[in-house]
Image (cartoon, rainbow over all chains, first blue to last red; front, top):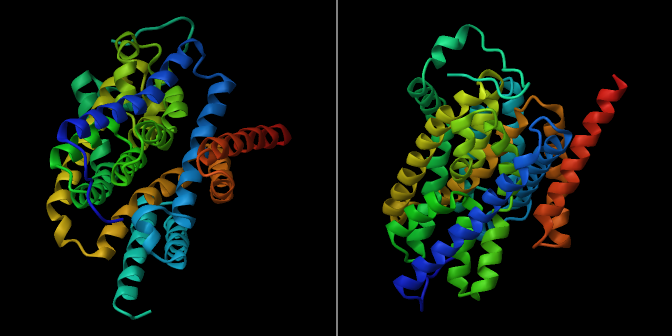
Length: 120
Length: 253
């Protein structure tokens, strides 16, 4: 994605940002209000937590397989390969989050770099 | 400082009790907890966002305020993409909002953790503004060892370090934008989702793990089916699969 934001005054840009903050807070405030009368240990809230995990995981998986934005310019095989490598390291190192993350991101960086240099 | 509310049992606190002696100690404990991997990951991810803000021709102040105000990377990125497209106002606001819809189930899971603490519960509408995937998970991990009264100061400390790291990361990315090669930018953008993948994969709760696995499978096909509604739908389907599969497995053992 390239190019600059054009045709907007500074005041309009800040007004937009204010509205974006407000519509984001809507979810935060709504969730807090809905939940006021519900027992924290109730099955409903355990289900809601599972929905949050499922939603985030779907988002991550979508970014790896079908990204939009700047990652669109990278290869599917690099993204999936780096992720798989990260998970292998993650389990080899007894589910170490740092090892998994840095292995996956490191592998991805190396793959993209090697491709830009024409090595792959 | 702790108090009983209703007939709820206080979580047992063992030898570490003196570590949580007062609010300031708890705040520092949160700072330290966040200072390792979480703050580093926030900073690194926001470097990528800072570079994006710079390339869009927006100001550094916009980068910092949008980071701390929206405090959810997908929504921040969506805002800039829509501004670049010059999309109509309503479609832009719906897009930004949907990109951060995860905050609904997340705040429903976070806010009740402060019930049972007078001061913590009073500030619940402030706590949810600090909430990101990082701070949410950071608090959830410590919930068993913290009483409701101890959670507020701990969470405030954890959130503070993450927000400082976020603001610092955006600024660094903004200032270094022109010097960053393509492979560095895309790696920083890739870092954030992949970090969360491992945070969730390291979870102990079986229901959450099953929901995580189901979501990873459901995500891409749902996106092809209906891009706008894929996230809430995939979340509800995967969350239900995880929740009920866990109950089924528990019933059998």
